Image (cartoon, protein in one colour):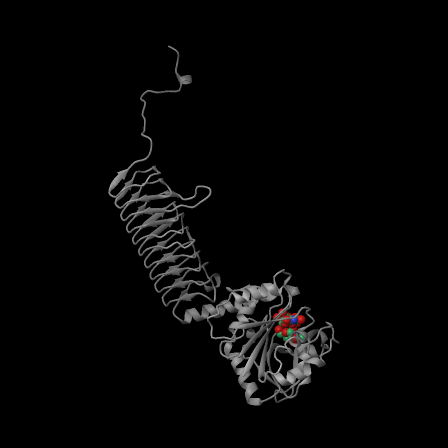
Length: 460
Ligand code: UD1
Ligand code: CA
């Protein structure tokens, strides 16, 4: 039986931010969400999050998470003053009173841990039956991390924080990852003994580890997993590692990425085989792209569904749905739950907002359609605008199957255009139009032969 505690009370001073460090975003999720995600291969009976600095923000952010997961509810434990990682864990004492099992403790700022690594740590801990088992790594640049000293059998002798190390101790590149498995009863016994006699005047969780014996040390194979985020530079390094992982996975799954370094993909995105992602393209949020589609160059797709064999060229698509075979761009913007039919063409400088297009409908040039519903095979002429906003409210426009709007027409909503309608170029349509007709709503052209400005008229 294992409970999990995540340390997330610190401000993260080195981030120089108002936002608590653990809420900083990395590839579509906050740091602490990543940490929660790394628990997917162990089955915790309880999940405790220690919160402190702006705890209401952290709780709010985490309570929005998908609760459908087969996990116990998150329990928030308040650490009102942040007196160190040991002090943070001391706050668990009343909450875990009588708990007989193991406690896995994770720092909230270590987002790249693989679920298998935690499973292995827990397995080793259970096999050895020790009071504690900790995760370590050999870092090329161990600066800032606690150093771990062991005997030849991987039994811990001591952890010393970077700032408390002698020059000789700093030469040790084996570091404490901030990931620990404790037999809770043993930890609970030593927690009250911590003191703050160190360079930072903080209560260190690492001292609790030092009190226990024997403690087994487990090395992580890929040291990148345990990188802790303390400042913006480390956040960007971790993001780079995450991006490499995500992109390598998609390429292995049959997605072509052209110039991957110029592409970013959130962890929450789903791609099918034979998707092609072109340079300078960014895929974010809950986006799904189906096979045969080609996205980019130069596109941003966010929280959107793209069907099969679609193309999106130099365009922005947010919160929208693009059906099979539709071609978007260059320079189009779909937003606010825009939805296309199959085989549509959304062309140059077109904006669709909360608009639903039927199949084989084209909006090829210079248009704004807002709150509009069209039938199938509609052709929206160049420069057609729906005037959907009267300054107070938004109003809907509907356009029936096979209708065509002329260039530069304005449809003043609320308005309904029937099927098989032709709207003459330059019309301003203010009244509903029935099926099967031509509508012209513009003043007639007047030609006055021989007319000149009076000033130019020569006196006889
Ligand atoms: C800690 C470890 C260090 C290890 C490193 C790995 C200690 C004393 N040191 O150092 O050995 O190499 O992690 O990343 O534990 N927090 C609280 N309450 C507090 C203080 C911190 O909840 O009072 C939380 C922070 O929000 C953070 C985590 O604990 O998520 C780690 O704190 P941080 O100050 O970053 O510890 P490090 O100095 O990195
Ligand atoms: Ca840290």
